[in-house]
Image 1 (cartoon, rainbow, N blue to C red):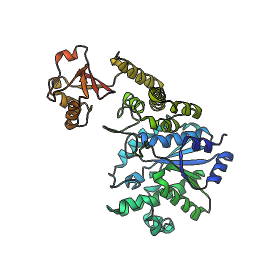
Image 2: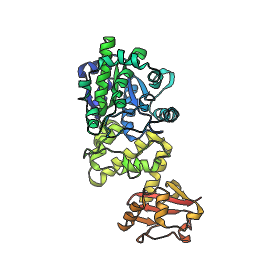
Image 3: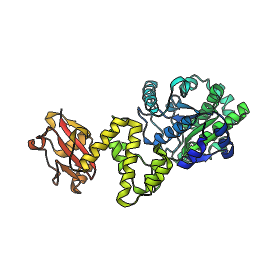
Image 4: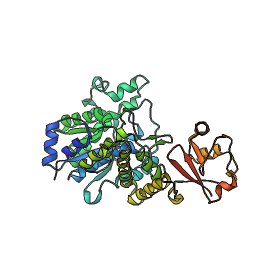
Length: 406
């Protein structure tokens, strides 16, 4: 069993950790059971969760046992960490559906067979708690003064923090305690915004069980300017192919800034670090070789090799001038929309999020139809545009869509 600590450190995952030397030693000498929490507030994970999935996958590959904890109970409250507003509350049915989707996505990187990994839902122990007993047995170990110094609460105090959300830290700390008692889980991993919650859980285990536990956080996915990556004009970069097509997913990574290539190859792929360093050292036009590797490898992990090849083929065909329409993402309109304004069609098919965005795109010369630049915001499609049964729409420099009539 190799020491995964060195791998995680070299690839840039580790942001903060509680006991560096102890963690390094136990990861080298023991089979550690650890957990990472996933918030089931949507029916798909997004690219922000992908680092946590990779963090977990590296640990499992080194022989350690992951617990993927979905927050079916805590999702009914909402985690205030990194948020400025209270989250929308979901029904139990919505949460259960989301959890089933999330497990399917986790399974692309994590092996759940034969107990090699465990999926737990904290609703199993949180929803039936007796509140008085919980406050007496668990709440007594939490200092309100100390909780108020946590970054996750400080950000919300200015706009108003509900008592409902204030309970979140107690619940997450209790999760760690339950997993420690049930599975011998001694380590919690998570994004750096979870640091305060991780510490709270460790402290609870120390007080209740007189045992040591550990925590590590990973860097959040940000670009070289410190801004979160994974945001597109249509929202988050989802792992679900129905929300973000494999082609759009591929293109996102194909178009990252040169300065972000090394970080993305290190955190989001299993490409060996010697090759990461070689690729990220390429300059000028040659850096595109690295971006192609990045886009292909990330797309392969999430959507499979076949879809990655399709996306790569589509991109190369389009940029090479020989468009293969079968591999371009398809959007469709009903027959009765054929003669409406092009801007309305763009909004209907979600090529752009609004008519204002469509107007801006046209005014800036960023829209073409079958190679014809659109300059009039009142343009409509012609019958001749559909001569090949579909219309090739190009948005900006590198976004292509095949428009068909249903």
